[in-house]
Length: 95
Image 1 (cartoon, rainbow, N blue to C red):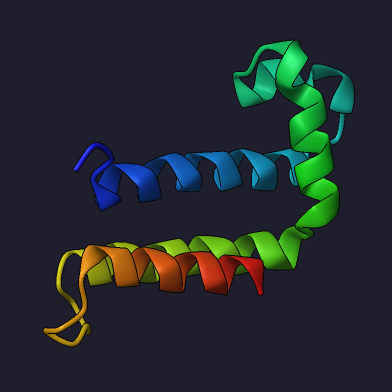
Image 2 (image 1 turned 90 degrees about the vertical axis):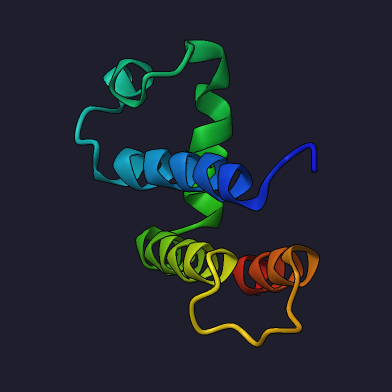
């Protein structure tokens, strides 16, 4: 396992948390500083914020929370493996 599921979930959660924070910024001119990213990457967050409104961003964070619990064996069938959990997470985020 080059990318354990918990680490993948954590990285995606960090990304969507920054998108949510971007939504609530009043002064977008300081967005890079507030998000803790290099200004070069700001356009990526602007685009993501357009594609994921506040409601959808909250929904994605909830999907990530559920996926994290499943990756730890909570409320998951015993025959589920990490690959199936990851596929379900991706499907739920994109739909």
